[in-house]
Image 1 (cartoon, helix red, strand yellow):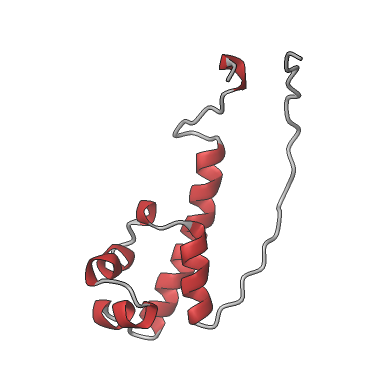
Image 2 (cartoon, rainbow, N blue to C red):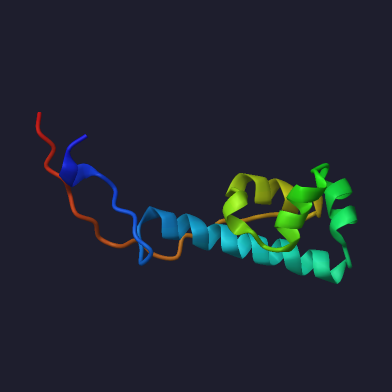
Length: 99
């Protein structure tokens, strides 16, 4: 891989930030529904067929331990239908890759 073609990850932006933003929105919805339905860790673990430590991670919002696909599956079990809306497309730099 060429040094200029590497993806740059920083705490201020990049691909990682977009993934974290999506997971954060999904996690907020999941925890809001769990609060409304008064699900504790035990109920959370049994409803989603996960271990107690994994349920603890979810209840304490340890977002880095869950990917977006897992969160979508958990929300589907709660009867939530997810729709994706692309807000905006920004211009990007075209790379001149060597041939």
